[in-house]
Length: 426
Image 1 (cartoon, rainbow, N blue to C red):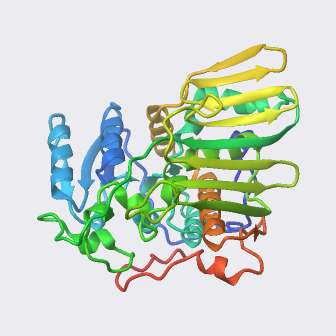
Image 2: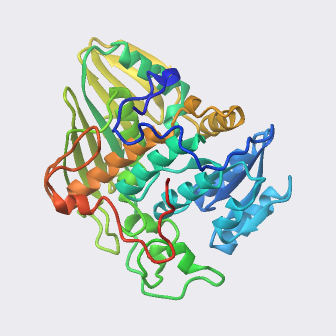
């Protein structure tokens, strides 16, 4: 249900969420100009990268930036204004109110991804949303629903899907180049330093901390719940499985040609950190499908390769293995032969694909459409939920629902602060 004819080898059936919604009414619509007018919401490390990459294309003009941190947003605006004037906002709603903005990219903390994406769709904007597309499974399902109803382009920030070498390798797998593939391993293997313990303090001067918290529960400001380290708190982030591991899980799922699993088992915890971290530093998740398994392995306390890779994917087939890694894609056959597919993906290719689809009004030509991003995001959340409840989850692969487990199902959503509730989808 999540695939399209042009991407038959890329897409897979995920879950029965969006049938019959493509013709829904009530969404604003305005075609972009030949020169796409783009806005970046969230100007941290990845948002800064968005501003640089989008503005690097001659047919795209970054016209607005938004961040609750005035130092960040003003610094990037100054760089961009060497080329053209850029509006600067604290509140993302000012961008959505601007009828001249064609599209937005969302590089905020995870807990703001889906709320802003939903509001942007309602405002008639095309959306590039960073991974994971949602802070919880309920939000991801709503975003898939809204995508079908809006008819807008919604690109997910899993840029590996725009890599020509990875695309060729997926075709190779689907055509039986490795024989039968029964297992893929998604590896997230790196050293992330401890963050220590940060006391309660005042937010930085000029920062609208209430707006930063948004839908999350009220909590006093600490430096560890701020720039980047928010990833390691359940209120705002999803741990490293949703931060970095989602790239490898998405690529493993893509290569295997699978959607949602029928069961998930996981172990995880803190074997390394003794600080403010809430999310695991060590995690192993096994996703079960009818005729194959997908395994995710995460260790955040090692700086050496595992099976030749730091972050990457290995597919195990009858004829050998295929590796996706930062050094490129290569198949290694039993007997010693190798087949090289080329270098890894670049975010520039991903942005270019998004801009082309915005200009042509063709969401079906996106390499990482939100229906695929939704499935990979849900896999990450299922891995975290199985880790937190400490038992195997039985999943309905068509709907994504967890069967017979009220505690796990309760983690599919969250309570939203008054004034920051999710936008209505339909």
